[in-house]
Length: 346
Image (cartoon, rainbow, N blue to C red; front, side, top):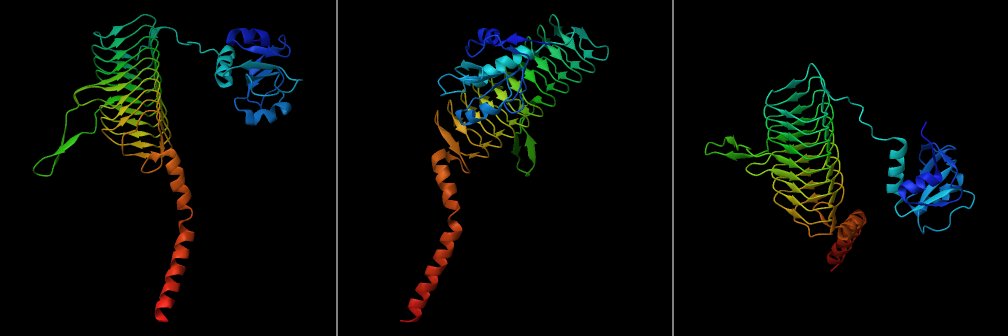
């Protein structure tokens, strides 16, 4: 069992102990689920009233977040949520349980270049001319196509697919069922009214430290690649169309769809089920609300929501107005009836 004193944890996460630095911590848990020996956290002051009833041996709280009970042990830090994440890693380290090997059922083309300490699991496929970096893990049934590149310490979960000429950076995590490099959806109608497929001859370039969720699809570019910047996090069931560009450290949450050739800036947050039209420019640090329908470009640091998407404050006013429409219609109908009576009595 992993054990640390509260003082030892404080030293590892640069926190300040309020209470007993020698109290023994043996695990991590949520505030309500915690037992004696656990450390928990409170990231929002509105939940401070729950601290008194927790059984946790210590609680991580923000510096300057007001008074805390004197009979509890606390770890004071600038960012409780981030510190709790680091603390979880102390008790549950992300170990590599895979011994470097190539499973007998894996198919690796002789022309592929395989780095050091690589694991290639059952029924995995590595195509001709592919490059696999050091310390890469390709789990069962994962697929790396011809001339694709996988950067060092990247991990493909079971069934992840990287098609031909796709480049994936270092320390990436590709979850099961994701497909990188499928054809972009491009067609042109000929003079007979028949849709002709436009060849998609470029690839996808994924930066470093990117996570791609389960069953997410990122299409290859038509003539230039689709690009995903460093540190981007894509949730499950996301679709990113051909020639999209997403800047560093942006977040794409579940069921977002981004149409072709749209450029997304850095540190953008796209909430669940937002739909973003094609050939738009979304500036840095934009926040897009859940289920927003984005039909126009958005300037940097703006917050937009609703359908069609508009400034968030305006969208809230529109939603509030909609709730009053039935009453307004009733009043309007009554006014029409009164006007009709006045006209009839002339």
